[in-house]
Amino acid sequence: MFWQNCTPKSSGTGAKLSLQLSTHEQIELAAQIRAWALELGFRQLGIADIELAQHEAYLQKWLEAGYHGSMDYMASHGSKRARPEELVPGTCRVISVRMDYLAEDTLPLEVLAAPDKAYISRYALGRDYHKLMRKRLATLAGRIAQLAGGGQYRAFVDSAPVLERAIAERAGMGWIAKNTMLINAD
Image (cartoon, rainbow, N blue to C red):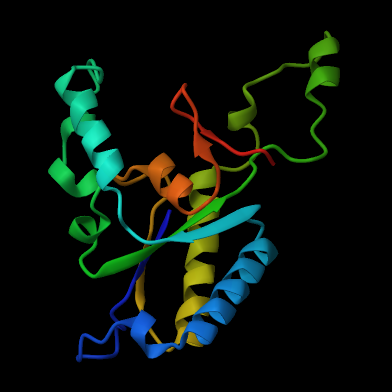
């Protein structure tokens, strides 16, 4: 997860980054960000505001019903899970990315059929995606800051109390299915 803070780091004025750019410039910036994301190996990128009130209400009901079981951490951090501006003050936009973790040249069915080969879960193959994505998000953030003339960011990769699926859905990256997972037709 990549959170874009709208207050430029170098500015003491508190001016909002989104107000420094015209609508046309914002559209061009979004297109450039998407191009950089693809170049860095992200399969998809979405940009969204931080309005998650509907998801916050659902989370609260879910917690009150005790559906979190022994996952006490789900009730931690109060409203920060659904209010990015409380987690990172000044946040007004969220950039959400998707990176496929299974290499295209992986042949899982052939490995399963070979008695002399071991098979492990797909998500455990390859490099640690947390480090890989965080490094690439930092590169993306540097490019954005340079082009946009400032701004602050904080990259999250499964490491912060945020409603990741809700944010990804809000950013147009898919929809949350009945099984609570984010589904993407791609």
